[in-house]
Image 1 (cartoon, one colour):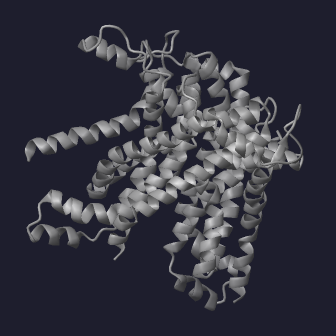
Image 2 (tube, rainbow over the protein chains, first blue to last red):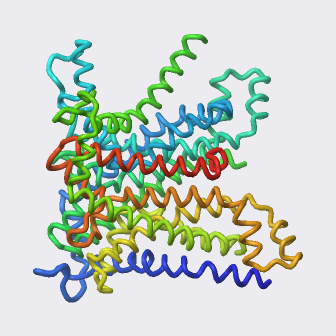
Image 3 (cartoon, rainbow over the protein chains, first blue to last red):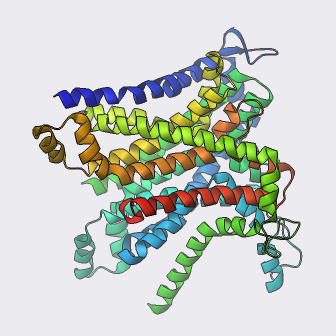
Length: 284
Length: 260
């Protein structure tokens, strides 16, 4: 009993820290979004709902929101396409090689997003290795301009988030009882049928969680689009940062941030509801 | 069947290649002897590392990043480890809420946490201050330490603690001689992830940085936007080497196989 009480006390610093510097700041963001805009300072006196009217009414911000959500969805889908084969491989590879391939997947996680984006800047530069390879092979006559557009933002974000998806899916796959797969095969099901009827459904909870995670992280990504997106693509996170840092319009920036958070939550809720049949089939 | 196996092998190899290519390219580009950011590098030299070393901006940023990351790591490993011990004794229901609170900074995008902190810190007079930046790094990295240590504790049989208790060991002795050796690997891995996450953090630092106080990622971002030369590759390589030095230390002390 004595140990129990002293253990409970150990949790206090973490709880205080998170309430003071995470929960309270979120509440601060909510109240900030309702404040009057200030002139010459970040916010004014009094409260208004006008920031939300502006955020939802202006086509510039609505378009940016739609593009950000779309970007998140595309990146999540592409990540799944690349991650699933790797997860299957990691779950099946012999113990001797497991560590090597595991390190290949985890090592990008240990390197900052900025550094990984920078790698793509070198590879895709006009006089970079990819262009020179394509020129030598004769596929193109003049170097392609591959940087600073939406495509390269998608590529770089997929690269950033593939490890986030491989790990939970590998875990889900490793927890599948091998006897089920063997039973399916011995009852005469083809490999493809076994995969779609047994392996994929049983791994779906991992897939679902990973898709949600990557969608949220990619929709709210700031630095990759800022570095690689060029001027053309306006995404909501960079417009929010512009309001907060550049224009010093804190209430409006806060309202935009809340709109982004609410929209992402709606998409996640809709996705979870739509994919529930698949997820429930596996839990029974 | 045979062509299919080869095809899937090639497919897998290209995905692994895709994951590693940008890292390899950055490291090799930093070793160039040429004037330009080029790949493959022209000749081999360490001149861009000495250029990095001579650049006051980069060195200040590196030192600031190291300091912030070191403080974050120490604080979150202690606080997160204590929280993991607490989590172990909570009931299932309460434990679930506790866990949710501790993982909050991981579940909510960094951008949103940073925006909330920007408003809140300026209200309590810590806006654009080093303490504010440090607090931001601590809350973002806390979940990493907590998850790793909680996962390691989950593997420990509670009977071991009960046995230690009934043999008359104090709470500290039980922790020091029974739990700590068993969770050391998890704690080290959590500390490494916390360090690397803090060291590489961009968005939160960008919003909360003190005036004139750029961390290494901020300095690198500016450099990449304005002057694109191999000094940037040297800066990036240094951060890659740091992460791998951390992995190497863990491999030496507890063995990598134990922390996977």
